[in-house]
Length: 194
Picture 1 (cartoon, helix red, strand yellow):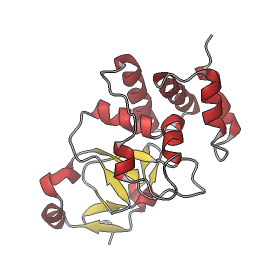
Picture 2 (cartoon, helix red, strand yellow):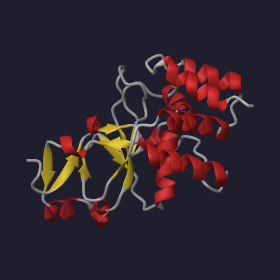
Picture 3 (cartoon, one colour):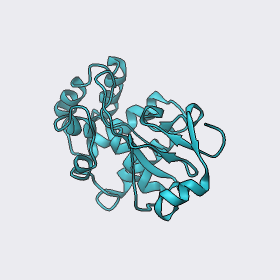
């Protein structure tokens, strides 16, 4: 019963960049959580993504940062190792990008497995510190508010980080027909040189 302990997060509560804790149907007492979850991982923020991908979802890989003090069900995969907040926001931004979702869609139908995610080519802060910092900052901002300009900027920065050409990014965007065309066009406009 929700409200009497730590909220339990299900996959359907995760949207790109955000978690709807208010809609938690279940909770668990902290002592029960500590008996089941090693090292108290639930007491720190961590990147999480949905296991189940639906045909009506705009994205296949949908990620957010779970806040400290909640646990998740089997339909949510969480980062197990502690990472700095900036690194977690970078991962969240990459996971919610059209480019990484395009790569995921080539390998998945209904379940986004940990094996698939572990094989994704994911650049780290060391590869491109400036771009990584900007993507992390944009992801952090998007976790607290909807901002179409920030979303378009994040998509463009990720495409640039993956060294796509304008034609390649345009093609990637065309493979997301459920995303409004105005949103895709805005990302492409930000990406275009000059």
